[in-house]
Length: 85
Image (cartoon, rainbow, N blue to C red; front, top):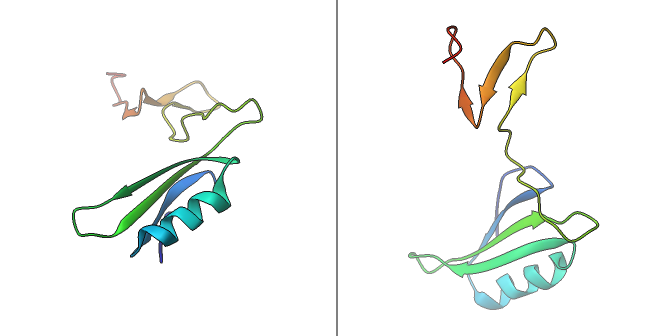
């Protein structure tokens, strides 16, 4: 088993057999939305995203960063240059 990422809200687990992937899926659901897929190399990937209490799954990636002084550092997932472009 190989765990990709250390974020408890989302990530992937890679295993060699479908049975192990399904066991991981059963352990993670319903607290997580789980997708099981077989990769090109034959390994199985278990992608998981934590669900909110209402069942929705938010976007866990940082897309906007604004400093306390109001300076926008990142907008829509992209770095903002000094000119604000």
